[in-house]
Image (tube, each protein chain N blue to C red):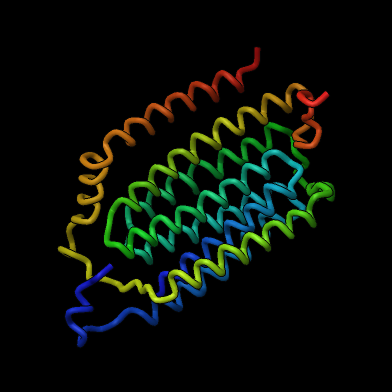
Length: 183
Length: 99
């Protein structure tokens, strides 16, 4: 994002506060994500997942994607976590602590994910180590120009994918009702 | 801010999600790990969009959120139907296609 600050070097830079905020959010998200996949309590896993999803929304705010952040809060925190809690209760999962949540492939899983992390991390560090993100000044502060641009982009450039996604959501809705119906 | 800090955080969350998909026994927990993976991808999309000054990244992050909602709904419905059928959500026990 080439912001206005690149043109005006005397302006205040928000780089350090943004980095501190990123570090705090990243540490909390990684800890919560590890707890999601290692906790012994199914309900706690859903609640830790909520922290990861909320941190994701805060990262979108750091990247100046306000509409995506609000959608994340509404759809994920409001709907999907509740859906998971309903799923846990409807499948009569053990609500308390249970020791058999992991299968015997867990060491294989650790190995696979560590190898994947090394490969992805190495290629990312090798490829993108010079790219920087700078905070641009908010254009037309006090208006919602950025969200208007996003709406224009969706409904002009990406209209066909948008319609496909709406048909997909309708199909998923009908499919979920048919699958879960008790006959 | 560096672009790489977002991409590396996305990579770490992706790998944690992959571990969850491989190691979890309960079907609902496998779906939660898939949500972790999709969120890691979303971070990458928004960060690349911010680097290029392009709104396409944000648009596709919204599409991924919609597809993830559809996936969670259908996945939970399947797990619910399976748990009614065999009174278990253990992914290791669903091997009716094998034998």
